[in-house]
Image (tube, rainbow, N blue to C red):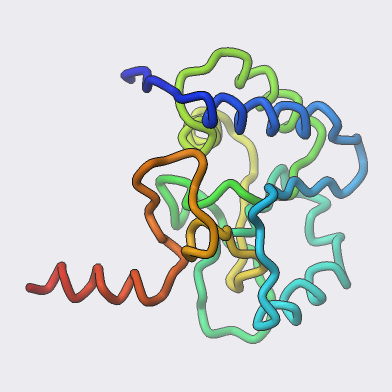
Length: 173
């Protein structure tokens, strides 16, 4: 594991997450939202469905809400992070419980990687139950191209459908 040189904005992002993680309350539903999270009118029904039954969160440690795997089902369903992902696509919104928040907070005490890589490595190296959904709830503004990224010079537009189609075309040539 090589250590990545972090810029001021990346360190600031980590510290903002640490501050939020330190405020997580036990036996409560805690959501962390970055300031560039976007709520699309196309996803309001999905958000309402989750918030209508937050007990879906009772037995999991983290729910990533800016990442999803669409399965065509109309009903909101949990998917295991480990079954689908090797890396976290976005860390701009997630629910987290107190136990995981405390351990992640402590893990972030030493800066080794940017926040997204750190959370990915933390999930990979621990036995927390991390889920995401089969439907999108929130978008990360810098990932759809609405905002520039203060974290990276080269921002991967992973949630921009036009960008994804261009990548597919480029990959096939």
